Length: 339
Image: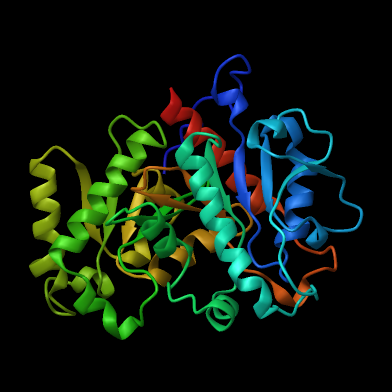
């Protein structure tokens, strides 16, 4: 992949509206590493990338300086981690999710979305949630953040991208069993995934003519139909149709030859057919710096590409790099939309 366009400087227009619109960071699972990562990210970024945390202040590490705020604009220039208080009932034990927190975690996400939609915040960054804890405590029925955010923003189709300086990948199917992938891969679904990715690369990453590589579903991209015919019957017709509309698409390629350095130099993003086909290469290449981006929504949303890490929560061991990169990417994307 060519070097990503870094876009406008983060929050550099101090005299303009963007400089006074910090990023909203939702708390995520309180018993996970989210609270300590918020503190570490603030220590690293402070006013270079202003953000505020929505959560219960008592869940933050004891040594975290807190600046309680009433509105997002007060996060600019704060001398501690800016916190928009969102109290939650029940005790906190790091590593052990409390069902009493589930409603608060869900409503913190919804509150953050409302602040971005209203223009009070420039973008949304979400700390990891524990889906089982939310289901157990509040009947949360969405497969993950992405689907919940799509519902909150009334967006009929969204795309999940994993991005870093090394690679951008998009899985055409996400959180479904591998056995269900062929049935879920319809021409309409693939067409929309490619279209949304193409538009997102232009709007959010500043690429004027994105080059998109498409992976095959089967080994060797089907090898002319000997190892499956989805490449012939499904993927190639979609590529041909969208090429005719002016999109720069390449493939379908065998997935096992798409991700070495020379191959990555030939495209700006790769569309993969299923979850692991996309996530294994980026997590191998750039595990700590991968960022989860939701494309197709009317708001900017990023997230660190890791989970709640309950096993190390509260021990000060969590690596904040992915959250830092997610906040920085959210700022660049928001600045690009603003420009």
